[in-house]
Structures are given as C-alpha cells and as structure tokens.
Amino acid sequence: MRILIVEDEEPLAEAVARGLRREGMAVDVALDGNEGHEKATVTRYDVVVLDRDLPGMHGDELCREIVASGALTRVLMLTASDAVADRVEGLSLGADDYLAKPFAFPELVARVRALARRATPVTPPVLVAGDVELDPARRTVARAGKPVELTRKEFGVLEVLLAARGSVVSSEELLERVWDENADPFTTTVRVTVMTLRKKLGDPGVIDTVVGSGYRVPASAAESGG
Image 1 (cartoon, rainbow, N blue to C red):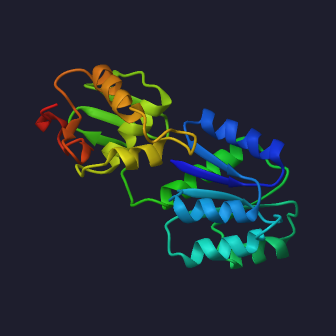
Image 2: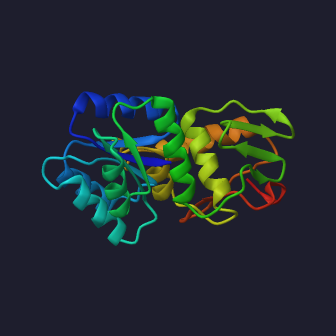
C-alpha cells in the first residue's frame, strides 16, 4: 500500500515513515501543506496521514481538496487536541479517521491498515490463485500449503498482482503501488523483483509476462505459462 505522511514536525514524520516502512508499506513524506497537496495530486495514495495544523496549505483545506477530488484515498487526520469538538470538526471536513497526538504507534498502524482496505475495491481477506495463498493481515504466503518467505517488496508485488484478479498490472503501476517516491522509474527494479519472486514461488510458473503491458497472475495460477 502507498501512504503519504503530511507532517511539519520532521522528526515525527520520519519516525512514523520508518515504522510504516517496517510494516511493509511504501511511504512518502511532505513537510508542509503545499508539498502534501502537490504529491497527493500526482500520486494515488491509499491513505494520507494528515497533520491538521500545517504551514502553507492548512490541513483542513488539504483534506477538503483530497475529498473533492473524488479519489479513493482515505484521510487519517492527526491533531494535538483530542477534544470532542475538534474530532467532530475534523470528521466533518471529510476525514475518514482521527487520531490525537501523542498516539501509540501500533494503533496508528491498525488504523492505517483499516483505512487502506477501504481505499481499494473489496478483496477477500486471503488472496488465492491456484495453490498460492497470500494473507495480507498476517503477512504470510504459502504455496500448496508450504510457507514461502518473501521480502517486503516481493510480498507487495504479489499482493498487487493477486488483488488484480487476473487483470494485467503494468510495471509503472507496480512501481507506484509498492515502492515510494525515491524509487528510480528507469531502473530494472520491478523486473528483478518479479524474477526473484518467480524463483521463490517455484514451478509451475505463477506470474505471466504480458509483453508490452506488464504482468498478471491468472485467476487459476495453474493456467499460467510463466
């Protein structure tokens, strides 16, 4: 999942970003409202973790812009106040959830994951194609009942492909959904990751290459020609 943190307290923003990356998420950071607006305009994020009191564009206005855009992006608003009136006001702006500072990091992770599930078309709790099973909540993958150990990026690529339910996913979309803004779009990162993922999943092949378009995992992985 792709996350944007818009927070002007840089140490807090970077700490949250590091923690979410350890949870397997692709995370970008913006340190003011204007930068956050620019990034949210050009990239489709699953969740924006948005500080309310920001320099530049205020968090309230940025929240309105995201909601007005019609994007599926969900907004988790952060604030230094946990007063009921502030929570009600934040939610009335269109925010999907509200968390007061200071917060417990595990709670932030749980809320982000819950919102991310609402930012994408409904998918089963466990993604299955043929004898391949991926459990997003437990972060586990198995083939024919045997565990498969994957890196965070390999897991992310497989999750996106399985969630596409047989549709082709381009390299550009995989780069956007699984990596953050620091990824070089001109590298072979996606191709190499798919190659190592194929090796770990074993034979028969699970992931098809659709020349000129991208990759797909057929609804029944047994149909894949590699």
